[in-house]
Length: 243
Image 1 (cartoon, rainbow, N blue to C red):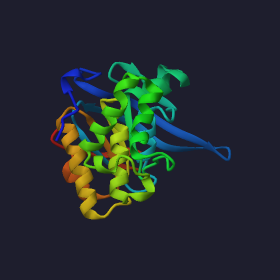
Image 2: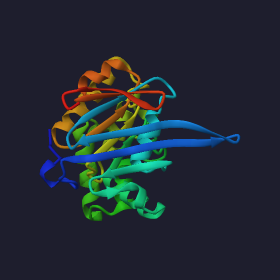
Image 3: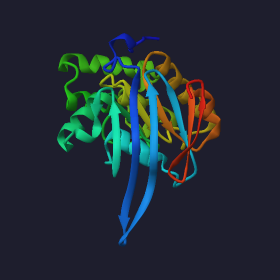
């Protein structure tokens, strides 16, 4: 199996890849303020595989969206490497996200009219991280890395859910980001396929990627260095080797 990850060449050679300080998030609804996250303080080190757990409404996905810059905090600071996410304009944030963060969704979000190969090439076309002459070969290497290179020229509809999720992971790796964020990545998969996906995330973490997976499935937490449990928008517990 080809190793496409070079942890020595990390974009962020810092002890803490992510630093969250005094994070609050609330929304205005019908004239009142609804608190979603409250006083979140957290550091995550390069190469960790983190599970963020909690019941529906506990703030898991909101935390993920704030780290990626998809949403903005009400107050507090988020640093990824030495970059303050709060300080970026929307345009700068989109460019930064495309180069530095890979996102894996519960429902895959592959473009249905593009082949798997084309889906993986697309982020490289947007961000220009790699020369055009290298993108097709790199996409094939990534699809081989996740075990579905033989399906490269198929449309997503021809594949199983597990295969589509593997393709989504390959797409998330397209620009060689140091950080992979996954929102319920095994939510639509059977237990065997879920284990395979989590094993893949564990391998990527060992190779230097930082993985944060939001999940409500307790079983997959055994693959992670740490488990962060949210209750009513607050960190209830931090468990694991680095806690």
